[in-house]
Amino acid sequence: MDYHELIGPRRKAERLYQLKHHLLGQVNERDHLISKTPADDRLSGGIQTVEVKGKPVREVGKRLQEEWGINVRSMTSHGLNGVRISLSVFNTLADVDRLVGALDAIAKA
Image (cartoon, rainbow, N blue to C red; front, side, top):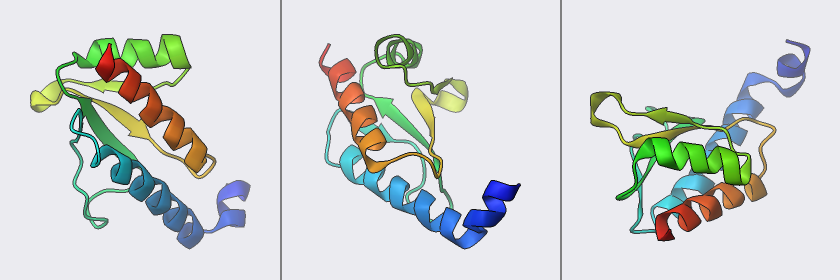
């Protein structure tokens, strides 16, 4: 709670949207990645779901964890085939770039 109070809810939200937009900017540039989360800031924030086209989500999640140490949740219900990415204020833009690089590598394998 002290950490949250120190940052403040407005700055926390601004940071999450900055990370979200950085992630979606890269996802939307790639044909092999599909955002499964509404882009509208009123409908989504720091939690995003991304599909690697043509790859089973459980395989994607396992490889992210084992090869890159990136922990995500595989989302399979309701026809989703994507990993849930939980961005947080302590993540950096470089962390997002690393994640996208890992997704690129998985897509090419």
